[in-house]
Length: 350
Image 1 (spheres, rainbow, N blue to C red):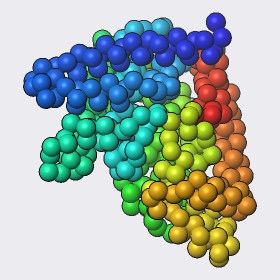
Image 2 (cartoon, rainbow, N blue to C red):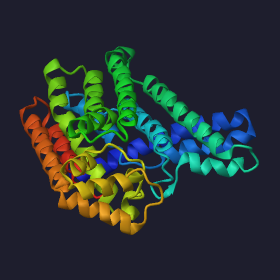
Image 3 (cartoon, helix red, strand yellow):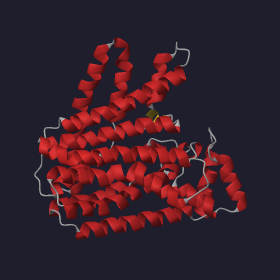
Image 4 (spheres, rainbow, N blue to C red):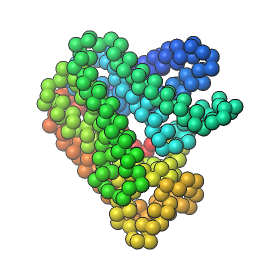
């Protein structure tokens, strides 16, 4: 079986775990009162898509330490996908995003049940926030009830707390940096805490801790995971502006309208001419940008060398990840899978 086929099979297993768990939780919520059914449906909407990369990294963190395949571990790994789902719901609220995977985001979809309310927009945002909170709680529940021995779970619980804290820290840093003067280093710090750590490094290390991995292997997971996680988000930033919306499921104007402190925009603003700098400042943070305006931002990012710079940053980080993997003392099977995940994570089109 190829590494790609193996990843597809693992994704299917994680999907099955999440579908069964979320269905039961959504039904329990809807059983409280019939009016909660549309809110419960958002649990399905938030968890029904995804590459399941975080679960895959957790799984291979476990297997890399020499542990065998385990259904209980797949359940524990699936819990990290619920953390991601919660983060996405909250992120869409913070960024006022209207679409995700080509569908209305939670706070937009929930307005439909509030047409008679005095504040449908605010109330829909409140409901979506609560959906995100519930998903985070569900993540902890699935992890704790995965079926792994309590002694295994206790090894990973401290890092689970770190994962949540650093994810929130990254979101807060993005909010605090939005609209600030461009700072490429600060932009990298935002993506490190908002995405990189909980996408690759922490899932790998949680899998390793569950498996009883040595400190040396856990350090190797960090040296591989952190640069790969940063490359993942840097690629995501490029796709956000240049990707095909049919594949990414995102409006290319979203990051611009939100004036998010991406490394791409930080480098563009730093290297722009005075006229280009003023033009970007005028466009960034503006809602309802036209396709021509979005295309103009694309032109500036290319002319300033920002796109090339971000591509160089991705290449350098992928090299770091490969070098760390080559030196890691882990099983041959895990080495092959993690090597393939480098490509899946950073050389993607959506």
